[in-house]
Length: 272
Image 1 (cartoon, rainbow, N blue to C red):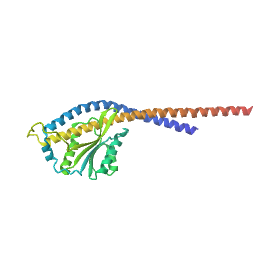
Image 2: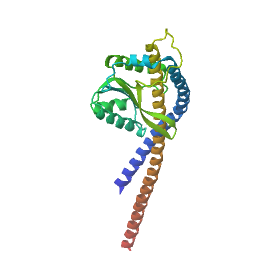
Image 3: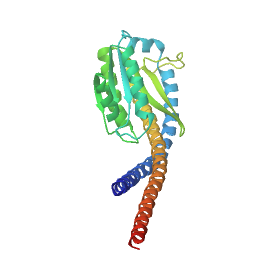
Image 4: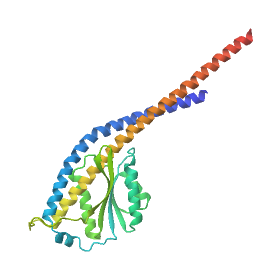
């Protein structure tokens, strides 16, 4: 009985320590989530206006000329994941989608953001052309430009189709796993006569910078939302487990006391 009590006591202490760490993670995620969400909403408006501008600047003929010679058998996937765990389906969802696409496309390569995605792609023997870890929770044009420049250089060499796999943030309770085709993309009929001083390369550089930045922000906001849900669920489960363990501890302790009292009474009776 003594050994059982000591074991339960150690489990209670371990769960309490884990809950302290989980609560701290939840507080950090909550504090970052509000700012990340606000930044994303502003960026969504900017990205939408920019897309409209690109439709006006870029003609279908110019886009077709730039994308001429694309080999549709070749795919490049931009994978968005987290650096740490405890964020529910955020990493497992993107991992499963990446595995499906790898099995469907034999000639594919990956650009991976986040340690979890990097480790998974390595585990399935996927080939990466770039890996980015410890990206900030508030991505800027600096981070997106590094990634977009890599994408554009690879496209010029390989003439492949480019996709992104990430979680799009809809609301705090809804995140949607997206397989988005980044390039080549469909544009509307030309609405404005292009400026000869603006090249297709300049327009597409601006496009890749903006779309990658928006994807990074969508993913980071979704990650924080997932982490809030997961840590809150873990805290709730921890509390329930503590209640059960404490009840068990008290029952065993009470049983031990009762047995000791019975033994004392029995001893007294034997001496009479």
